[in-house]
Length: 243
Image 1 (cartoon, rainbow, N blue to C red):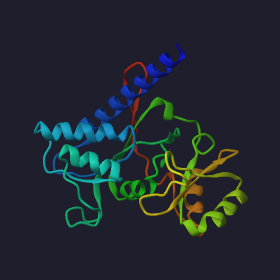
Image 2 (image 1 turned 135 degrees about the vertical axis):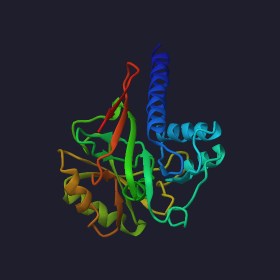
Image 3 (image 1 turned 120 degrees about the horizontal axis):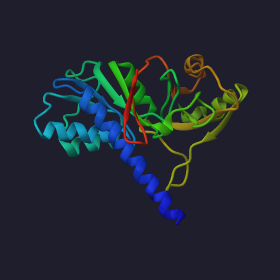
Image 4 (image 1 turned 180 degrees about the vertical axis):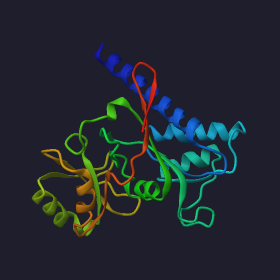
């Protein structure tokens, strides 16, 4: 009985993610855009909806920048044209980026990177004129950093020195281990991921800058410099748009 309940909850969560992704794509994506497409179980529904709209002729002329191999492969499967951020077609900037999040606080500040793609996700977000997040209501939290672990991408050679510096800041540090593979997770850029939690709430704006001052840290999962529009799927079936 408990197994059936858990399975029903998973199905319901997936429905909510799909509703948020489709709502954001329908409202925000326009023909001719330079479009950043995020990574993860909610962002994948944005990609699929964009593919549907392209196939139906309701969108055209898109130039997409996916933030991970997973997203790139989904774009290729659906016929969404893919370009590098440095390409002539994109020129280092995007009109819009739509992505998911692991935590969202009341000011629409974020933790991202649970899927390990935080470095390129942040490149895409901060290169975009407009930024949107899709999520279900379980991602809403009163403050960031004490619940879902904050990811940091670090150089392999700096694993111990960065861990010690983080511990001095009061963080609990865990090296992210791979599933179905012995050893740590290795990012698409050959780095390692440290997942950290703070015992007490911290200032995410301050910490986003402060953590990147530690030698060997490539990037961290606080996203605070942009306040996105957030599409939140509610359990009763509505999608709230929070600006």
